[in-house]
Amino acid sequence: MKSPVVLVAITLTAAILIAASLLILTGARKTVGSSTLNAPAHAARDNA
Image 1 (tube, rainbow, N blue to C red):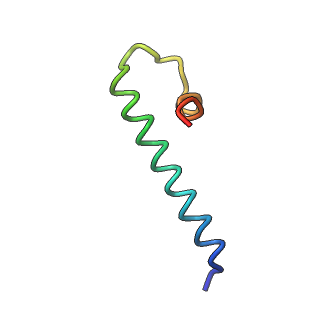
Image 2 (image 1 turned 180 degrees about the horizontal axis):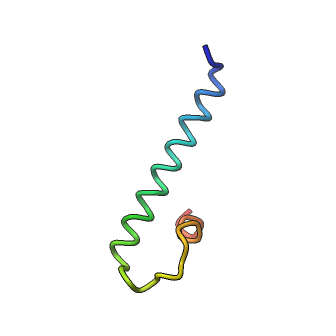
Image 3 (image 1 turned 90 degrees about the horizontal axis):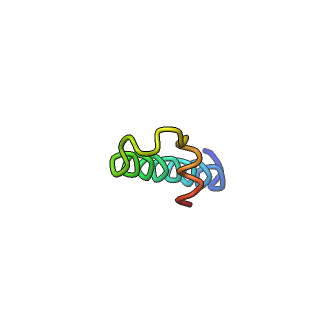
């Protein structure tokens, strides 16, 4: 069995990745073609 700390860390990481991807996808849909130079990392940092 893995320790609870490891399980919590994995769960939080997965949740953050899913939330970030959803924010990037919704943001990309709203601003299609207007900000093609912005990288997903920058968008995630701005939305955080």
